[in-house]
Image (tube, rainbow, N blue to C red; front, side, top):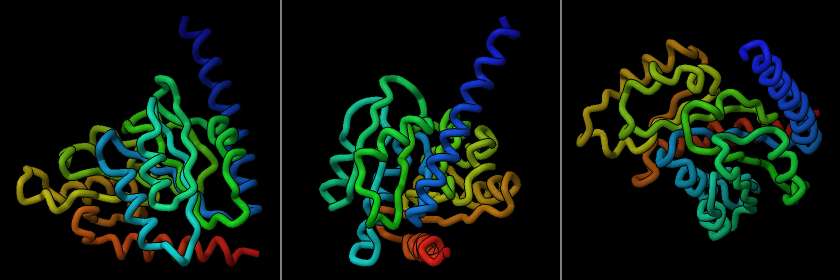
Length: 223
């Protein structure tokens, strides 16, 4: 049975990678910075997007592809913030793939978009295995999840350009060591940018949006 399954998995990943490269070509031609936003459920992906949209409002145009197993609640939240958002319901699948993103792009008006964020399905395993054509993978970890998550789910932290450690306002009430999160994440990816943030208080968000603006501007200035 193993001899049958391995080629099937390899074929799926090869097709996904080919479509991801085609997606990347579209993004580069339109000079759109694209992020693949990943986390476990409840870590705060949509809250980070809301606060980021508020911070960049009037300077950059943001669009979002929302991935969820079911419901369109998160897309509706972002639309109320004036963000162009389209929903993908995976009907049980634990991650987005390149073909899903390609189909969703047809529902977005990309010509005036500066930043496209793909909010992946919430879990720390499957989304890490599929390239979507994005420029940066961004992982959000809330301190309420504990400081052992980088060690337990290493691939997610290894492949991400950025780690947002969210809900730091809760640290006084939790048995979670921020330094341990940093140390374990850096061991997996020494080049990873780490921002400690709180969407509730706004702490740390200025540094995150400054990094993001620099990436958007760099993409827009490419020949």
